[in-house]
Image (cartoon, rainbow, N blue to C red):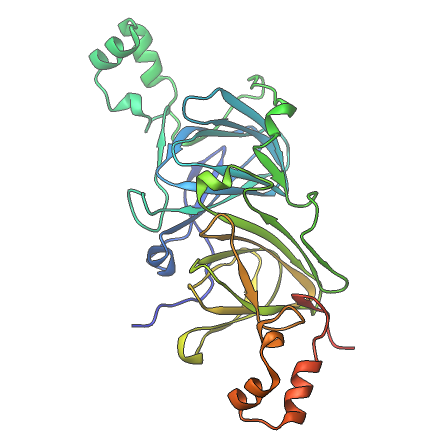
Length: 356
Protein backbone atom coordinates (compact mmCIF):
# COMPACT_ATOMS: atom_id res chain seq x y z
CA UNK A 1 0.00 0.00 0.00
CA UNK A 2 1.43 3.36 -1.04
CA UNK A 3 1.60 6.11 1.56
CA UNK A 4 0.36 9.59 0.67
CA UNK A 5 3.27 12.07 0.79
CA UNK A 6 1.25 15.12 -0.23
CA UNK A 7 2.18 18.25 1.81
CA UNK A 8 -0.41 19.24 4.40
CA UNK A 9 -1.33 22.33 6.44
CA UNK A 10 -1.75 22.20 10.21
CA UNK A 11 -5.21 22.23 11.79
CA UNK A 12 -6.24 24.15 14.89
CA UNK A 13 -6.95 21.79 17.78
CA UNK A 14 -7.06 24.10 20.80
CA UNK A 15 -6.60 27.54 22.30
CA UNK A 16 -8.52 30.54 23.53
CA UNK A 17 -8.13 34.31 23.97
CA UNK A 18 -4.39 33.94 24.47
CA UNK A 19 -3.64 32.05 21.29
CA UNK A 20 -4.02 28.74 19.52
CA UNK A 21 -2.40 25.35 19.04
CA UNK A 22 -2.20 23.60 15.67
CA UNK A 23 -1.08 20.09 14.76
CA UNK A 24 -0.56 17.82 11.79
CA UNK A 25 -2.58 14.63 12.21
CA UNK A 26 -1.09 11.22 11.30
CA UNK A 27 -4.45 10.21 9.84
CA UNK A 28 -4.00 12.91 7.20
CA UNK A 29 -0.20 12.68 6.93
CA UNK A 30 0.52 8.95 7.44
CA UNK A 31 4.30 9.40 7.24
CA UNK A 32 4.14 10.95 10.71
CA UNK A 33 3.10 7.60 12.15
CA UNK A 34 5.49 5.58 10.00
CA UNK A 35 8.45 7.80 10.87
CA UNK A 36 7.56 8.23 14.58
CA UNK A 37 7.42 11.99 14.01
CA UNK A 38 5.28 14.74 15.53
CA UNK A 39 4.65 18.26 14.24
CA UNK A 40 2.79 21.19 15.78
CA UNK A 41 2.63 25.00 15.96
CA UNK A 42 1.95 27.32 18.89
CA UNK A 43 0.60 30.82 18.17
CA UNK A 44 0.38 33.33 21.02
CA UNK A 45 -1.41 36.69 20.85
CA UNK A 46 -0.32 39.69 22.93
CA UNK A 47 -0.17 38.65 26.61
CA UNK A 48 -0.76 35.06 25.55
CA UNK A 49 0.68 32.49 27.93
CA UNK A 50 1.14 28.79 27.28
CA UNK A 51 0.99 27.25 30.75
CA UNK A 52 3.90 25.15 32.10
CA UNK A 53 3.84 21.63 30.72
CA UNK A 54 5.98 18.67 29.78
CA UNK A 55 5.67 16.51 26.70
CA UNK A 56 5.94 12.84 25.83
CA UNK A 57 8.43 13.60 23.03
CA UNK A 58 11.80 15.20 22.40
CA UNK A 59 11.57 18.14 20.00
CA UNK A 60 13.27 20.95 18.17
CA UNK A 61 11.46 24.29 18.42
CA UNK A 62 11.86 26.95 15.73
CA UNK A 63 10.51 30.51 16.09
CA UNK A 64 8.71 31.35 12.86
CA UNK A 65 7.50 34.82 13.83
CA UNK A 66 7.62 37.40 16.59
CA UNK A 67 9.44 37.85 19.88
CA UNK A 68 8.68 36.40 23.28
CA UNK A 69 9.91 34.66 26.40
CA UNK A 70 10.34 30.95 27.03
CA UNK A 71 10.93 29.14 30.28
CA UNK A 72 12.94 25.93 29.94
CA UNK A 73 13.42 23.56 32.87
CA UNK A 74 15.64 20.56 32.18
CA UNK A 75 15.25 17.63 34.59
CA UNK A 76 16.98 18.37 37.90
CA UNK A 77 18.21 21.73 36.59
CA UNK A 78 17.36 25.40 37.30
CA UNK A 79 14.89 27.27 35.12
CA UNK A 80 16.33 28.99 32.06
CA UNK A 81 14.41 32.12 31.02
CA UNK A 82 15.11 32.92 27.39
CA UNK A 83 14.31 35.88 25.21
CA UNK A 84 13.28 34.30 21.91
CA UNK A 85 12.92 35.81 18.46
CA UNK A 86 12.35 34.88 14.84
CA UNK A 87 14.95 32.41 13.62
CA UNK A 88 15.73 30.90 17.03
CA UNK A 89 16.10 27.12 17.31
CA UNK A 90 15.83 25.43 20.70
CA UNK A 91 16.51 21.76 21.40
CA UNK A 92 13.98 20.33 23.88
CA UNK A 93 15.09 16.92 25.23
CA UNK A 94 12.69 14.33 26.58
CA UNK A 95 11.42 15.29 30.05
CA UNK A 96 11.91 19.05 29.73
CA UNK A 97 9.24 21.39 31.16
CA UNK A 98 8.46 24.58 29.22
CA UNK A 99 6.26 27.65 29.25
CA UNK A 100 5.89 30.34 26.55
CA UNK A 101 4.80 33.98 26.78
CA UNK A 102 4.24 36.83 24.33
CA UNK A 103 4.11 40.41 25.57
CA UNK A 104 4.43 42.03 22.13
CA UNK A 105 1.75 43.20 19.67
CA UNK A 106 3.02 40.84 16.95
CA UNK A 107 1.83 37.24 17.17
CA UNK A 108 4.50 34.80 18.39
CA UNK A 109 4.52 31.58 16.35
CA UNK A 110 6.69 28.59 17.28
CA UNK A 111 7.07 25.39 15.25
CA UNK A 112 7.72 22.06 17.00
CA UNK A 113 9.10 19.02 15.19
CA UNK A 114 10.13 15.92 17.08
CA UNK A 115 10.48 12.24 17.80
CA UNK A 116 7.39 10.35 19.00
CA UNK A 117 8.97 6.90 19.37
CA UNK A 118 8.32 7.10 23.15
CA UNK A 119 5.06 9.01 22.82
CA UNK A 120 1.64 8.21 24.21
CA UNK A 121 0.36 8.20 20.61
CA UNK A 122 2.68 7.50 17.70
CA UNK A 123 2.89 10.39 15.24
CA UNK A 124 1.66 13.15 17.54
CA UNK A 125 2.64 15.04 20.67
CA UNK A 126 0.77 14.82 23.96
CA UNK A 127 1.39 17.62 26.47
CA UNK A 128 0.83 17.27 30.22
CA UNK A 129 0.04 20.58 31.91
CA UNK A 130 1.07 21.41 35.47
CA UNK A 131 -1.73 23.95 35.98
CA UNK A 132 -5.03 25.05 34.50
CA UNK A 133 -8.35 23.24 34.16
CA UNK A 134 -6.55 20.22 32.68
CA UNK A 135 -3.52 20.40 34.99
CA UNK A 136 -2.24 17.54 37.11
CA UNK A 137 -3.67 19.09 40.31
CA UNK A 138 -7.21 18.58 39.01
CA UNK A 139 -6.74 14.82 38.88
CA UNK A 140 -5.60 14.27 42.45
CA UNK A 141 -7.92 14.47 45.41
CA UNK A 142 -7.59 17.34 47.85
CA UNK A 143 -6.14 14.94 50.41
CA UNK A 144 -3.34 13.78 48.12
CA UNK A 145 -2.38 17.31 47.05
CA UNK A 146 -2.49 18.52 50.64
CA UNK A 147 -0.25 15.72 51.92
CA UNK A 148 2.20 15.81 49.00
CA UNK A 149 2.88 19.54 49.30
CA UNK A 150 2.02 19.96 52.99
CA UNK A 151 -0.70 22.52 52.31
CA UNK A 152 -3.98 23.43 53.99
CA UNK A 153 -7.29 22.77 52.25
CA UNK A 154 -7.97 26.40 51.24
CA UNK A 155 -4.56 26.70 49.57
CA UNK A 156 -5.16 23.44 47.71
CA UNK A 157 -8.55 24.65 46.47
CA UNK A 158 -6.90 27.85 45.16
CA UNK A 159 -4.22 25.87 43.33
CA UNK A 160 -6.79 23.59 41.76
CA UNK A 161 -9.55 26.04 40.95
CA UNK A 162 -8.21 29.58 40.38
CA UNK A 163 -6.75 29.02 36.92
CA UNK A 164 -9.77 28.09 34.83
CA UNK A 165 -8.00 28.34 31.49
CA UNK A 166 -6.86 25.26 29.58
CA UNK A 167 -3.38 25.13 28.07
CA UNK A 168 -3.26 28.65 26.61
CA UNK A 169 -4.56 31.70 28.48
CA UNK A 170 -4.42 35.47 28.20
CA UNK A 171 -2.82 37.27 31.14
CA UNK A 172 -3.84 40.69 32.41
CA UNK A 173 -1.60 43.43 31.06
CA UNK A 174 -0.40 44.27 34.59
CA UNK A 175 0.96 40.75 35.27
CA UNK A 176 4.73 40.85 35.62
CA UNK A 177 6.44 37.83 34.13
CA UNK A 178 10.12 37.00 34.78
CA UNK A 179 12.65 38.92 32.74
CA UNK A 180 14.87 36.90 30.40
CA UNK A 181 18.52 36.31 31.21
CA UNK A 182 20.81 36.79 28.20
CA UNK A 183 23.31 34.30 29.63
CA UNK A 184 20.65 31.60 29.60
CA UNK A 185 20.63 31.60 25.78
CA UNK A 186 24.19 30.26 25.68
CA UNK A 187 24.14 26.60 24.71
CA UNK A 188 20.33 26.60 24.63
CA UNK A 189 19.51 28.61 21.50
CA UNK A 190 20.94 29.00 18.01
CA UNK A 191 19.53 31.74 15.79
CA UNK A 192 19.55 30.33 12.26
CA UNK A 193 19.25 33.78 10.68
CA UNK A 194 22.39 35.05 12.42
CA UNK A 195 24.56 31.91 12.68
CA UNK A 196 27.57 31.34 10.38
CA UNK A 197 26.50 29.80 7.09
CA UNK A 198 27.44 26.20 6.37
CA UNK A 199 26.68 26.70 2.67
CA UNK A 200 26.52 29.98 0.75
CA UNK A 201 26.10 29.84 -3.05
CA UNK A 202 25.74 33.14 -4.92
CA UNK A 203 22.28 33.35 -6.54
CA UNK A 204 21.69 29.81 -5.32
CA UNK A 205 21.02 29.43 -1.62
CA UNK A 206 22.24 29.34 1.96
CA UNK A 207 22.14 26.69 4.69
CA UNK A 208 22.60 26.69 8.45
CA UNK A 209 22.87 23.21 9.98
CA UNK A 210 22.05 22.47 13.62
CA UNK A 211 24.15 19.67 15.09
CA UNK A 212 25.95 18.69 18.27
CA UNK A 213 28.74 21.19 17.57
CA UNK A 214 26.71 24.40 17.50
CA UNK A 215 23.77 23.27 19.67
CA UNK A 216 24.95 20.39 21.91
CA UNK A 217 21.46 19.61 23.24
CA UNK A 218 20.41 18.20 19.85
CA UNK A 219 22.46 15.15 20.84
CA UNK A 220 20.02 14.54 23.71
CA UNK A 221 17.07 15.17 21.43
CA UNK A 222 18.44 12.74 18.82
CA UNK A 223 17.59 15.05 15.93
CA UNK A 224 19.50 17.28 13.54
CA UNK A 225 17.98 20.28 11.79
CA UNK A 226 18.67 22.88 9.15
CA UNK A 227 17.33 26.13 7.75
CA UNK A 228 17.59 26.39 3.96
CA UNK A 229 16.97 29.58 1.97
CA UNK A 230 16.77 29.10 -1.77
CA UNK A 231 16.94 32.13 -4.09
CA UNK A 232 14.33 32.75 -6.76
CA UNK A 233 14.27 30.06 -9.50
CA UNK A 234 17.30 28.32 -7.97
CA UNK A 235 17.43 24.56 -7.53
CA UNK A 236 18.45 22.36 -4.61
CA UNK A 237 20.49 19.44 -5.94
CA UNK A 238 18.89 15.97 -5.72
CA UNK A 239 20.15 14.34 -2.54
CA UNK A 240 19.40 11.82 0.17
CA UNK A 241 20.29 11.05 3.78
CA UNK A 242 22.96 8.36 4.07
CA UNK A 243 21.98 7.29 7.58
CA UNK A 244 18.47 5.91 7.03
CA UNK A 245 16.93 9.10 8.45
CA UNK A 246 13.58 10.70 7.71
CA UNK A 247 13.58 14.35 6.71
CA UNK A 248 10.63 16.45 7.92
CA UNK A 249 10.29 19.74 6.06
CA UNK A 250 8.20 22.80 6.96
CA UNK A 251 7.93 25.54 4.33
CA UNK A 252 8.62 28.81 6.15
CA UNK A 253 8.33 31.25 3.25
CA UNK A 254 7.77 31.37 -0.50
CA UNK A 255 6.77 28.55 -2.81
CA UNK A 256 8.23 26.14 -5.32
CA UNK A 257 8.17 22.66 -6.75
CA UNK A 258 9.37 19.44 -5.15
CA UNK A 259 9.98 15.94 -6.43
CA UNK A 260 10.80 12.80 -4.44
CA UNK A 261 12.08 9.60 -6.05
CA UNK A 262 11.92 6.37 -4.08
CA UNK A 263 12.69 2.70 -4.59
CA UNK A 264 12.79 1.27 -8.13
CA UNK A 265 13.38 4.75 -9.52
CA UNK A 266 9.72 5.61 -9.05
CA UNK A 267 8.68 9.22 -8.56
CA UNK A 268 6.57 9.11 -5.42
CA UNK A 269 5.82 12.82 -5.15
CA UNK A 270 5.62 15.74 -7.55
CA UNK A 271 3.96 18.75 -6.04
CA UNK A 272 3.89 22.47 -5.43
CA UNK A 273 4.88 23.52 -1.92
CA UNK A 274 4.00 26.78 -0.21
CA UNK A 275 4.36 28.50 3.16
CA UNK A 276 2.74 26.49 5.94
CA UNK A 277 3.11 23.11 4.22
CA UNK A 278 4.68 20.16 5.97
CA UNK A 279 5.94 17.11 4.11
CA UNK A 280 8.17 14.16 4.91
CA UNK A 281 10.88 12.55 2.81
CA UNK A 282 11.01 8.77 3.44
CA UNK A 283 14.28 7.08 4.33
CA UNK A 284 16.73 6.59 1.44
CA UNK A 285 14.52 8.59 -0.96
CA UNK A 286 16.03 11.33 -3.14
CA UNK A 287 14.49 14.81 -2.98
CA UNK A 288 14.99 17.98 -5.02
CA UNK A 289 13.30 21.38 -5.00
CA UNK A 290 13.09 24.36 -7.37
CA UNK A 291 12.06 27.76 -6.02
CA UNK A 292 9.49 30.03 -7.60
CA UNK A 293 10.63 33.58 -8.50
CA UNK A 294 10.14 34.87 -4.94
CA UNK A 295 12.36 32.17 -3.45
CA UNK A 296 11.76 29.29 -1.06
CA UNK A 297 12.71 28.86 2.60
CA UNK A 298 12.29 25.76 4.72
CA UNK A 299 13.16 24.39 8.15
CA UNK A 300 13.78 20.65 8.46
CA UNK A 301 14.56 18.12 11.10
CA UNK A 302 16.44 14.93 10.30
CA UNK A 303 15.97 11.93 12.57
CA UNK A 304 19.64 11.72 13.52
CA UNK A 305 21.68 14.36 15.43
CA UNK A 306 24.55 14.61 12.92
CA UNK A 307 23.06 13.86 9.49
CA UNK A 308 25.16 12.94 6.46
CA UNK A 309 23.81 13.80 3.02
CA UNK A 310 24.85 12.61 -0.40
CA UNK A 311 24.14 14.91 -3.34
CA UNK A 312 23.98 13.50 -6.83
CA UNK A 313 24.82 16.61 -8.89
CA UNK A 314 27.59 19.22 -8.80
CA UNK A 315 31.29 18.55 -8.26
CA UNK A 316 30.52 17.00 -4.85
CA UNK A 317 27.90 14.73 -6.42
CA UNK A 318 28.32 10.97 -6.34
CA UNK A 319 28.39 10.70 -10.14
CA UNK A 320 31.56 12.83 -10.29
CA UNK A 321 33.51 10.12 -8.47
CA UNK A 322 32.44 7.20 -10.66
CA UNK A 323 34.85 6.12 -13.41
CA UNK A 324 33.93 7.26 -16.96
CA UNK A 325 33.86 3.68 -18.26
CA UNK A 326 31.55 2.63 -15.46
CA UNK A 327 29.16 5.49 -16.22
CA UNK A 328 29.17 4.67 -19.94
CA UNK A 329 28.29 1.07 -19.15
CA UNK A 330 25.78 1.96 -16.44
CA UNK A 331 23.84 4.38 -18.66
CA UNK A 332 24.70 2.54 -21.92
CA UNK A 333 25.80 5.78 -23.61
CA UNK A 334 28.81 6.68 -25.79
CA UNK A 335 31.78 8.55 -24.32
CA UNK A 336 30.75 11.93 -25.77
CA UNK A 337 27.48 11.87 -23.79
CA UNK A 338 29.30 10.72 -20.65
CA UNK A 339 31.76 13.61 -21.05
CA UNK A 340 28.91 16.12 -21.36
CA UNK A 341 27.27 14.63 -18.29
CA UNK A 342 30.51 14.85 -16.29
CA UNK A 343 31.52 18.30 -17.58
CA UNK A 344 28.29 19.98 -16.52
CA UNK A 345 27.74 21.18 -12.97
CA UNK A 346 31.44 21.47 -12.22
CA UNK A 347 30.84 23.97 -9.42
CA UNK A 348 31.17 22.69 -5.88
CA UNK A 349 27.59 23.37 -4.98
CA UNK A 350 24.40 21.84 -3.73
CA UNK A 351 22.38 24.80 -5.08
CA UNK A 352 22.15 25.72 -8.72
CA UNK A 353 21.28 29.30 -9.78
CA UNK A 354 18.66 29.65 -12.51
CA UNK A 355 19.80 29.27 -16.13
CA UNK A 356 20.98 32.46 -17.83
